[in-house]
Amino acid sequence: PEEHLRTFRSIDEFVSDCQQQRRSLRHRPRRECLLENPPPEPEVLGKIGLLAKVDDDSVARVLSWHMAGDMDCIATTTKEKAKEWHRKSGGRQQVLHINA
Image 1 (cartoon, rainbow, N blue to C red):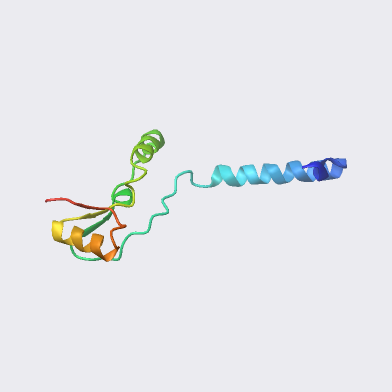
Image 2 (cartoon, helix red, strand yellow):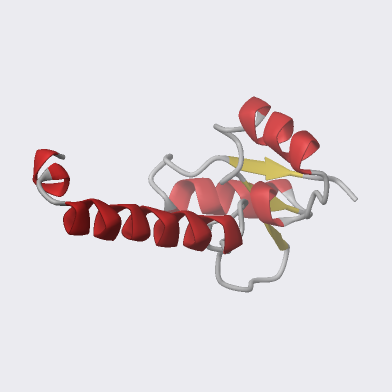
């Protein structure tokens, strides 16, 4: 921004602020899952995006890109529980039943 280029002092302050922001970003976790798990309930395993942690950043990036629309899908152990969740959400919640 132009107001940061008026004096040497304002330039130094702007550069210092930018460097501080950079340091802050470098120390923040790069991957963050913002999904909330459903309330604990029998026969509900959880949301797909929360069932496992992928340690390799490159693999995690590829998986999250491929599964972007499925990360909030709720996995259940029975078809009946999956139907119940789907019905409770008015058909908006993706569900997947996994036969153990």
